[in-house]
Amino acid sequence: MNGVLETIDNAVWGLPLISMILIVGIFLTIRLKALQITKLPQAIRNVTANEKSGKHGEVSSFGALCTALSATIGTGNIVGVATAIVAGGPGALFWMWIAALLGTATKYSECLLAVKFRNIASDGHIVGGPFCYIENGMGKKWKWLACFFAFFGAAAGLMGIGTSTQTNGITSAVHNFFDPNSINTVMIFGHSYSISIVISAVVITVCAGLVIIGGLQRISKVAELIVPFMAVLYVTLALIILISHASAIPSAIIEIIQSAFGMRAASGGALGAMMLAMQKGIARGIFSNEAGLGSAPIAAAAAHVDMPAKQGLVSMLGTIIDTLVICTMTGLSIIITGTWNIGLEGVEVSTRAFQLGLPFSSRIASFSLMLCLVFFAFTTILGWNYYSERCLDYLTHGNRHALRIFRWFYLLAVLAGPFMTVSAVWTIADIFNGLMAIPNLIALVVLSGVTVSETKLYLEKLKVKKKIAHDMNHLKNVS
Image (tube, rainbow, N blue to C red):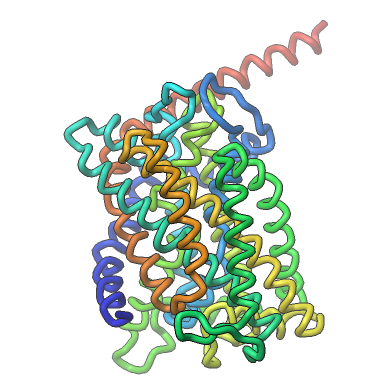
């Protein structure tokens, strides 16, 4: 089965899709005149305002960002980065950076379109995302493409990125800390599992169920509390590693660049090494920050905001926070401590890096990483439940009965995650991610003209506001 999944994964995440993601990112960056760099200060101002300025919406702009971050900041930042570097070498981190830099423009565009073309249901709840801007923006004749995205979006949440990968990461971290030698075990379906894995799987499932039943409002409130806390905690721990090993950072950067372009490969193998680093880096980068995937727009569509471009700017910060900050810190910690090539797998790579890098005892370092991973993965479970439910909502035309059944299947998938092999779980998630990205990327190119016009409209409005504010201040000074 693993062999079959690997074959499918290599086909989905082959050169065509990788090229498509990069080309769309470059195309949007050019059309938007590198807006992700030039308008970054304005994006930060929009986040700090945290206001509900729109007529329609369910959460604030900040709440929508936190909901999206709750889904993006997860095991991809800890386990995914480690997996990419082990498989593709340190150069995979470089391609994560490239994917993130270009993906910021992609994230801006897709979240802008999500607000522009969102649907408002009769009961007031918002349904928006790629399926809406494909159908409403490109026209009814493209509804099949919208359904294609929605189907794989629901499947990705249920069978990959939202459930199995997250609980697998959580229970592996708990197991490595509390019962690394599997001394206390229990038999399930003829296989022996550590009691720590079983208990943590049940606890996570119950906690997820208590939040998921409350819908977007509860998910958003939990995310607004947990996301800032967990991000600060993890960044602080990673900074301690980097500061205490500051002298090793320049050589780590050189190693990343050399590996990214196959310079460290044996003669004749440079191109193959470069392609492997590119494939693993971009695939894991997309898994982590979800730029171009089409998931974040589903949360952005629910924001109380008056102009689509405003939410686009807020949402694009998610890619910066996720990949250019958190994934970079994880990757540098792994490369500096050299834990990527000593035969470890998954969360064990990051755990060992923290044990070697932090100036604490191994026990405290392991517990610290386990705590971060639990928070990261738990919020991802919540965020992806919302995404997949909205995809199903679109497919079933708001059938409440179908959504209630889906929630129970989702929680069962969460519970089953730890009992699947690590490689199979990540490969399945990769496949569905790739299949989601294809229709979304097509729509972003077709609707790029709308994105540009909405951006111009917003920037002109900002100029008018600044001029009015300047004139008012001038009158006050004169008086």
